[in-house]
Length: 298
Image 1: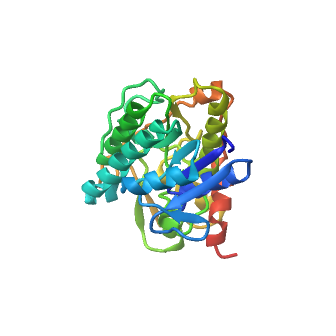
Image 2: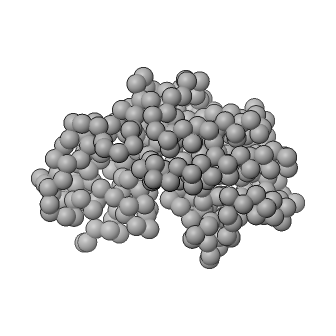
């Protein structure tokens, strides 16, 4: 049996779809799993049920698991902390432990929100200090992943965008809705983001999985993030220019966003991956044009 067999959790999601596509373009044998959006080429797996994970691992025999499934919206996390704990931490612990027992490498997708945003850019060795419950659950997920096996991989990433099934699937693409409406709206011009295209992150995941096959030193924590700094107001300014949509009704708000606290600037240093020759960056204007073109009337 080939040693290139990958199981992708959350394969129906924004990032999961891109990771699935990246591996399918290669010689890897790929199995994507989802829960509420299973079907077509995705199997249904409830990762909160350990017995379902066991069954899939025994049947498919993956050599790598890319764990994309998570509750990733901070305000939704605050509304359902118990459900988030089960998904982001407990399910991750089960996956990581079962993978370790079977000699499978797991790539766990984490977040720049494990940092408080006070002293960027952050290297992989910097001390985390999450400001919100989402960041804490993802940090706890990192811990249980690496406790299960030092050979597992943690990949921290920033806010994502890319081809979406609905505009609110990404906190970047949802900004188009504000431009298409005419009522006045305040938008944060405080928190500094480094948006990354999902294809870039998928490329990094694929490269790590490939390299791990021949280099066991590929383990532990890695960072990858976009290379362009912008606030939400900055993002919507780019979108308005790309599609020639007026933003006169959008007001720049210099204050921190309401809701779950966000770090001011949690830029990630890409240096560890770049030293391995791994990395990809899609210019924001290029990526956002492709992602949002289907949603803009010609």
